[in-house]
Image 1 (cartoon, rainbow over the protein chains, first blue to last red):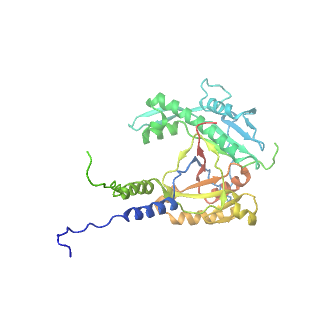
Image 2 (image 1 turned 90 degrees about the vertical axis):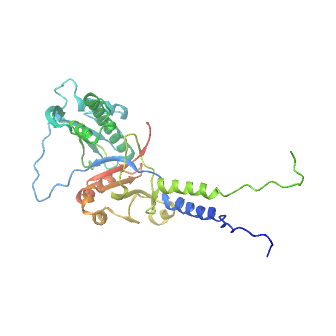
Image 3 (image 1 turned 90 degrees about the horizontal axis):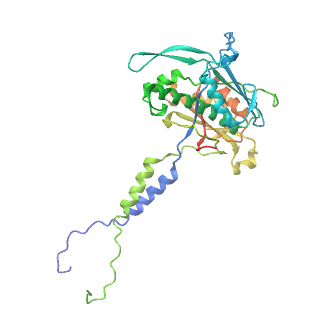
Length: 198
Length: 153
């Protein structure tokens, strides 16, 4: 062969890029990027048909009836309102700052704190009842649900600021449980009315 | 300074190209999840501001509601349909669907199972409520109304 002694030849890495490209394209095609987000709710369990249900009586002052009609109009507590007023309406209802006799009553409940002590907080007994018709649009329904969630979240933020000095989302696990007990998310989703018009 | 011979420019080294591509590859491997099913319905999710992220994808089952996709519309029309797994189903199949999904999970995780309702914004509440009633009957009570995050409207 040639007169000079050659070194061991290097492995050709030229095709490495092609392999990497192939893998990359596979992952691009086979995976999705979007994270699922949504409004989380817990449905009430189905009542047992064999057991006779006692009607749960909720006092009128403890109930905020939100009704969404088929063409997207919103009625809350007997008044027609628009979507932007709903949050404040719901907040007033949950908080009842001035102990108005027409707004929900409060029951002082002792909540166990993470450090073992007890904290007596007047928990609102109010329930927001959300009713729709069968031809209400889903978009409006989600917007209403969103406004109600926002009302609850803002109340939680306020309570949490007063108690822990931080926002609800910045709380530790156990602390956020305390706030959840103090301000429970009480939205009842009734079955829809069958008629399109009220 | 000039050299005597008229040498051409040395070629640009591509030795680091694989490294670059591998870096992109790892980024995609980490930040994405496997696509698990093909959609037979199309939807535009409603928008909301107070959305929460769905944790633990393995515990989540999906119910898609919306119009059939364009190729399927010739056969199935444009009325909203419910998609479970890979086919169109009716509300009656939800009980079986939930039971099947529940069986896939381990005993400890079953209480944590979440149903994600992915429905088109234009759907009527009637069909959604039927699905919800059926979910209550199936005792799958944790649900999430899928919505995309927006900053306000």
